[in-house]
Image 1 (cartoon, rainbow, N blue to C red):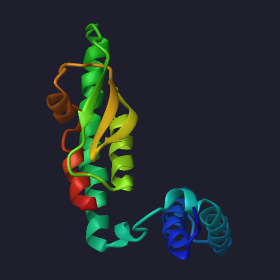
Image 2 (tube, rainbow, N blue to C red; image 1 turned 90 degrees about the horizontal axis):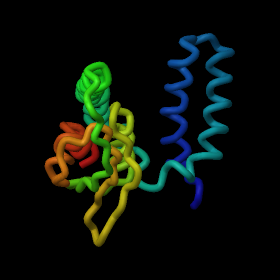
Image 3 (cartoon, one colour; image 1 turned 60 degrees about the horizontal axis):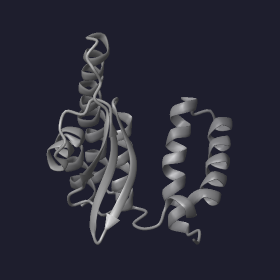
Image 4 (cartoon, rainbow, N blue to C red; image 1 turned 30 degrees about the vertical axis):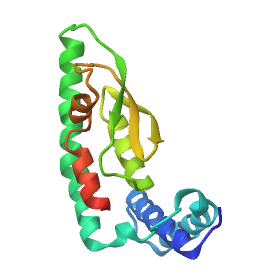
Length: 172
């Protein structure tokens, strides 16, 4: 893997934005410190993070879609999963845990697959264990704490909710 200028820039920008969110300061000392730390981080880590299409999310339409997805769609999925887990735990319901192989439809970009896997893992009651590609058909193995469906497609619809459609829309 080779570090490229595009990769460094694509890594630096979100790193610096995160720095700004953490410091909540526009003092020159903070800004200069942030640039130095984030640039050094980007130089040393870009080759591990950015493999293709480094500027795809810098498209304003995709960026707005990503914000809508994160703050509306994903937030809602997390709330639904939290309520479901609270009902299960507080209602003293038996837990039927299992691992299900869920097909992924229409997502081939590695960043989009990582985003979907991370979002599934961040919703309570599910953990993405592996993402596999078998002859062009991508699937995820998901440990599901409150397994209500054994059919792969139906289980995928329950677990992924609207997340897969939105991620496909953002990264298409």
